Image 1 (cartoon, helix red, strand yellow):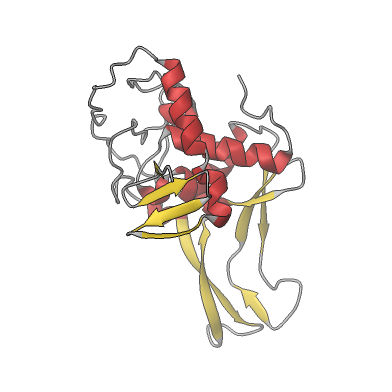
Image 2 (cartoon, rainbow, N blue to C red):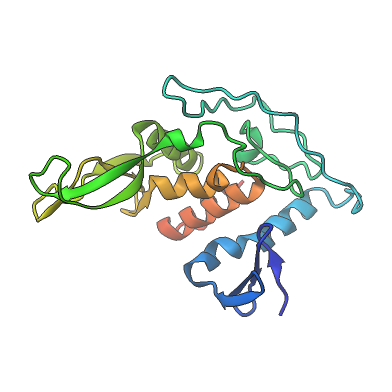
Length: 230
């Protein structure tokens, strides 16, 4: 097997479509779509700067001064130019204030206020007001949904936001908050919470892989291999 390291604890073998974590292996399943792009990231970075010395030790960017909205959620102000990095990567992620260059370990809590993009929705017995809670689910706020839409519109400008309330059309259960989706012209819907968690590494930062994972998902969902090209 030939494993590719995904993060500090997970390795992926594209030949067998398996994941190795904590000494155990398992099928990669749906995660394979995202994991397989690691290979392309490595290839693209090397192609963009083949002369970069192999022995260079990546240096973390200067500490980010957090900018927050009134709700305490991250205020994403894009750089005018891509952040400097040894491989000259210039995709959308490189303009994000939380961009981390390859080789710098991602850490929890880098993005201050990240969880304020999310909230808990309760699924209640229809007609109740707090009693009969079946379960809770993590959903994005309206602010979080707008950021998810902005990320997708980097590649699919025609994308729009949609919100649905579980159980609103009838049934024994109903959520007390909406679930937001980014709708594509193809008719596909992407969960806004999943977009943010994937792109921002659950609050640990943004990398070139963030761009490639999102771009490749959009290519698959739209059936358009030209999404993000050029």
